[in-house]
Amino acid sequence: MSHAIANLQSALQRALAVRPQVGGFPTLAETLRVAGVRRNQWSLPSCQALYLTELGAVVIQGEPLLSGCAEVADFDAAALIRALRADQSGASTFPEFLQAAWRAGVVRYDVDLLARNVTYLGSNGERYVEDYPAVTLPA
Image (tube, rainbow, N blue to C red):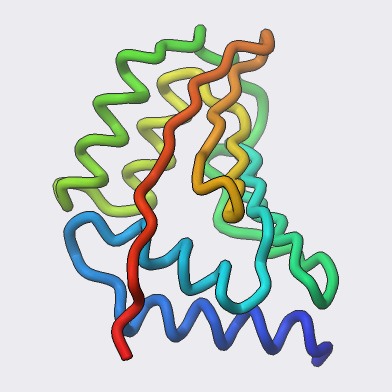
């Protein structure tokens, strides 16, 4: 196993151990940032996550949201924001958030761990950018 993979897996395990149930994304993001992850790019509906780290790039292939052909929904920023708020309040799981983002027309999103923001992208170049707060990790 490469150092980049081992480092990322260790950071993901740490993040899951300290992440609060409600509003946990900033803690996850900070744990990854401290471990040297600079960007995290998600492709929907394939659920492929690319982590760009100081030790190299690592890809994780998640469970795809669908198989075969499907039309891409029109980008709906209001529906995306509802999905984000549900996730932030603990009212949805991460897989439910991914499904809701896909239904809102999100085909990709990019987490910039240095700038502390996430850019959600539609198939025609639409975008919604949301900042997330800095947090202090538990000791």
